[in-house]
Length: 353
Image 1 (tube, rainbow, N blue to C red):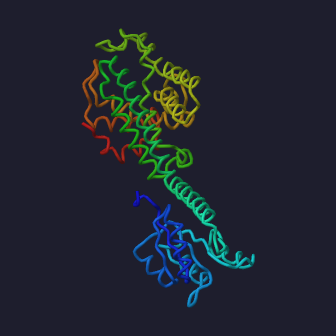
Image 2 (cartoon, rainbow, N blue to C red):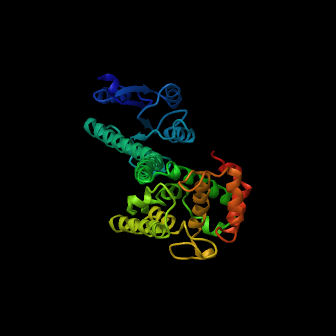
Image 3 (cartoon, rainbow, N blue to C red):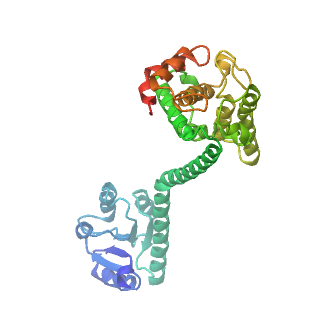
């Protein structure tokens, strides 16, 4: 159909050349003719051609002068220009190419050759625009794909975490609340500059996803212990403690099946170290002070805060104020003092009751 044809402007001061050229080009293109550079610029005010065929030897303004103006304007600089000339001097051709022309076609031109040369250059121009569009949108495409993957990963993690919670009568909503607590502490760490060297390369989104697996090891704990409606015996509590090592082992199994990632590294640290204590009395490894991974020390505060404000078979829920006091009193024994200070300063953000 006519409106599907690409638009070409032919510029030549010779009426015969314009007539012959238009007759040839009209087989495949919509064609407008201009007898001068001035007329060309008038056409360009309301038209954007796919290509311009521009005669070099014209009175008043020649092709070289015209292309300089075309290339100087943002709205016309990317329109391909092919020079039409009766000259065969290579120096003239070199000058035209250096000014931005994409080709030279000598007059009188062969109709079939003229059409083929235009076809080839329009194809190249189409491919150039497609490549430019792809390059400009590549980052956006990558970000969208990455976001889709993160959303899928997060949905799977939430499902796994909910499956773990379904086996535990007392920890409903625990995963979500501890995730919020970790998020608050991460944000305050960034603002304060505390532990800046350790945290500067952390991916917060991955951290918040991976912390959902901190209790994944409970999936290996016997139901009689996990669902016991009263306080655990010492033997049962020793068995419950194993959820940290079970969690570490589960994530290590995932690592053997999947490519290593920061996400799995973070998840394993959360699972294995969130019950370690600053004074070395925690489990499973009895780590002390800064030997405890920072992620574990962060989760310890978020985890204990949620446990304190939640009802358990062996206790009533503490108020927010009581929970803040207990954690504050644990500074230097159960918890990292620097993190406790941040927690206390921002304790109002933790009040989810």
